[in-house]
Length: 212
Image (cartoon, rainbow, N blue to C red; front, side, top):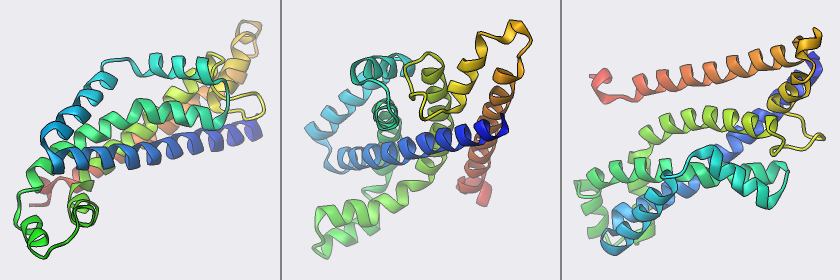
């Protein structure tokens, strides 16, 4: 049981971290482009973001996996699809206040390319809120993956995760074999709680008001 839990923990962490990193890369890129370009580009990207945020996360992931089937990479793709909009909106809000500051004007006066200004100068100054949201979204991704695996639409049996272990023991809980589901469930609860604690601590550390 312990070996299965450790293996499932590894799988759940891999899915959560991988989907979080890919969602950050995609969402931050679109959010920066929207804030820097403005106008029709900004309006188009934000309408897509609003559209994505209008649907429940689990519902979109369920539809994606029902179409694509089971698999680690397919679960990661589904989680990226439902997560990137959070990062795009967060980084756009920060970038809108940063794009008119002096260091951006200095970079433009030096004749730097738009790509270098956006990703070399604007992006690093927009990362603190992204790091905090990213930590929270990793916990959310692990929880979503466990839910999908519990429902039988997530990872296959050959790649057991904590959600799949909980599902395996759910039907025999009333027969007295409660530990098959309870112990992986407790590990999942501790994991998500620990990640949320890290996210709260990062929010305190990266808050400039607390620094002053």
